[in-house]
Length: 386
Ligand SMILES: [Ca+2]
Ligand SMILES: [Ca+2]
Image (cartoon, rainbow, N blue to C red; front, top):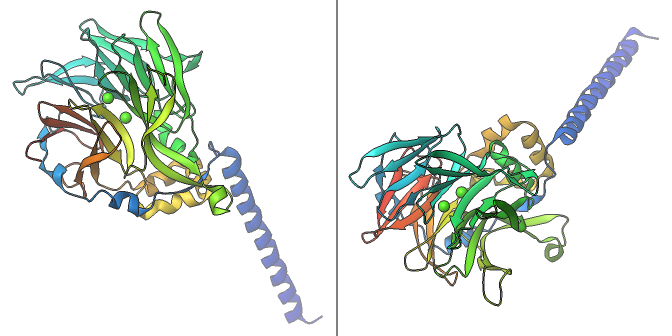
């Protein structure tokens, strides 16, 4: 045998060995990703741009006045009591309030970085959703956990709350599977893991009102309290049949109406569908309409994330990668929706120049008060001039 042929065979053998090794490594990594992935995801089709273009963009939110800049860290929600005192819970564990004279007060401290939705009861207690700890009651006596479990299971992602006239507290639990620090896994998985809960203070009982919701978020009552509205941050529609394609799911941003009284009591209907963004908190306006804050959860540059189950498994297994591609668009949008579900008007900061990622809009005294998960202030927008 000549030495050239022998060395060629050895070289081929090395290449084959190397290829097998690389393939084995790739197979091991793939198995590792799939086996250890915490999600069982669906492929998604994001809403067409036409959904957003139905509501022309403006820059009205760029006129906001910044309240307490530097004093309030990522205030997700905001509430104003009947005396005009504004309350918000901040990421550093404070419930802070803004008095009518413009002074801020660090009012109550709680060992938490996950306080979100806030409301005030008829009796004057502040109720706060702590994603991780459940429903909190805050008053002059301090902070009490009202409920942290439902049907023996821990509430993992309490998000927004409202009190009905009978004293019941209705609140959303965004995901029964993933907690506050892993909310992105719920987005990647895209399954209906959330529920709407009710806490009855007279019996101290917590019950499930609606289950199988897609990340339920904002909760509001109608003027007559004959129904409540709960917003699903992302609702998936199975388009497998109409598109004759395997496992294609389309995202629809919508809020549901749940009847509390009347002949439809206990029934759930669509309140508003095809919103031009993912709905976060919702608040009843004095005229009976609603203010809904809309999020852009996945940057348009990274929509492909939703087109591959393998890529979703990869992102879920290596959280650092999700941070890289998350790239939420820097913008803000709030819509005013009539009681019949029609969008009346919208307010945007299309580039996030002044405020971005607005999560809450509350009307009081002809002004909108805005919470945001990327701001260090509360936005205040005069409605008459807007
Ligand atoms: Ca709220
Ligand atoms: Ca929320």
